[in-house]
Image (cartoon, rainbow, N blue to C red; front, top):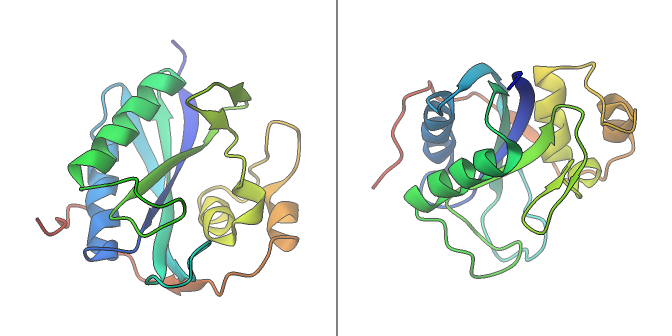
Length: 171
């Protein structure tokens, strides 16, 4: 298979979120048939959905992978589970959330996976890290992420300094 550029959104608001993300970046970099191209800065933002939870820390990574999309999704979900991810409340608090935002120029509508991520253009905490990684990035329909970001609702995004890769999440 020819390598594909895949962009993964990372989020956490439980159990030391910055360390959760830093550890996840290290784990993503070690996926089979995959190379980490770049990591975005981390951002803090208000939660989407229920407001009675801590702010989220978000970021993104750019991977070059030969994994098919559903195999990549399986790896992402395994990493989430290893970090104690529980799917209790929609848009609720979580130790780690890994979303396959963009997979090359593919449009995927599978019962397990929709790419581009259906809420991407409404999430400044996903768009801004992607723009940090690749400012000229476009969606498969030709929409530039720069124009999507300009029209995106404000979620009180605040840029943070990332922890170094390899920082372990608490157990």
